Amino acid sequence: MDKTTLNQPLFLCGMMGAGKTTVGKIVAEKASTSFRDLDDLVVDQAGMSIPDIFDRHGEETFRDLERKILIKTSQQMSGVMALGGGALQNQRVVDHLKIYGWLIFLNVPKSVILDRLIGGKNRPMLSHGTKGREQLRNTINTLMNERLPFYNQAQITIDADRDPPGDVAEKILTRLAIYEGFNRR
Image (cartoon, rainbow, N blue to C red; front, side):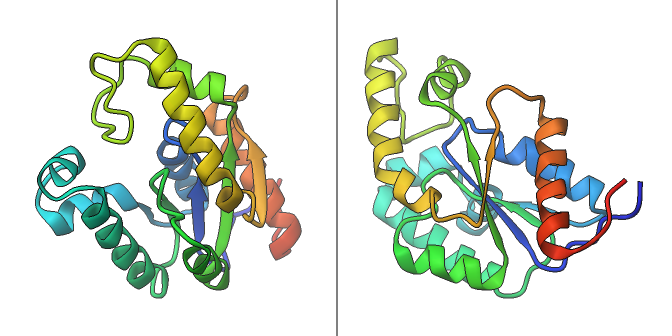
């Protein structure tokens, strides 16, 4: 395979459980570039876990910190970044990312997201410790309905529910080859 070189950064968006981090790492490896996870950057900056930020300071403080880090980092980065599920908070953030790189939406149906997240931890937007499957489904539906208008503005949408992460990464690189004009074999 020819070496894949990204001409601009990639920002992977989508719901929690869509596979942004897993796929992002594979894309970065295949393109011989760096990978960053926005959640990790927030944790490093805050010096505490995301659930602790939510518990101690609330969602508004978390989103403000997330937005500031994303805006600053996106202006000077190369490579691939996995965004948090709620990182696309408003139109300005979406527009900003599309100026500085490719916004790529990993589209996964709500039912698949539910299956991937049931029983999971470290996701304060779900905080479903004692919630049943139906309550979790309602929370995912609400979050998806709020976020989908932002996700749908991505330059590239990849259906990522049935294929293994390596195949999803290949789909991304193949689409980028068309738009950026590099060869893939």
